[in-house]
Length: 339
Image 1 (tube, rainbow, N blue to C red):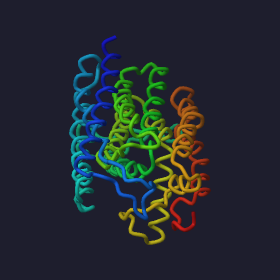
Image 2: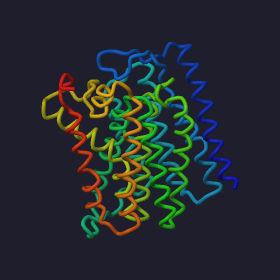
Image 3: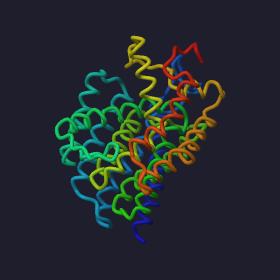
């Protein structure tokens, strides 16, 4: 029973910390000022994602007193998460060159893999593969990409928060039904931390997450997927499926911009969700649409993979086909005037 009170406390801590950070941002004029590459029109405080970081990292060691969470897992989340959040916080307050941010991201990813003993074997089309050092290299780039794509996708009110909450809740339900309850607690803790922030971030947002929060979320969700894969290879696939909206939009957009020769590190408004928000004239319909896609399409497929024996590779392709169609439909990666 105590653990559920702890989870409720995390929501309250995050809620209160976000309020404090909002007042701090207003007092220090830490505002996100709209420009030609923004998806919002009103100056809004930024940096509220620090509340997610602090509430999650503070409670994670306490959580280990109540449930069986391996300490290497805690250290992976703490070390990499804190480094990512600090670099994002400093970038929110000024500017850190892209090369130094990227270096920090790779250090964080390597730290995770050292703590988790690398990347586990995966199953492709019912065949188990142990990729050894190739898998570790892949996992390093995977974590760095997850971190950055989450930052790219945090561009409209509530979107990154809703994605994190729905993916974590979906994974927790699958873990519970599969009987692997020890895997539930870290994603559930993150979902509670994000819920407290979401109260302030839901459209119309009163504070933005900032790089400190978005990068932290992307990295931690990637860590969840690798840790779960050590329990069962099929659990790696369920995370890729549950996070499909973000993975497809960000990867599709980046690929198109690379092929066109754009400077991919520069800010832009050419993600599918950004075109969609301009088409609808508001952020709320897009955020709710992503929630619906997660609940009504991706979650059932993840259940089929996690519980009903559907091959993860096939489940992933099935899940991503409509998402690719939506990326085309909403001009992901095209020049902005195409919207």
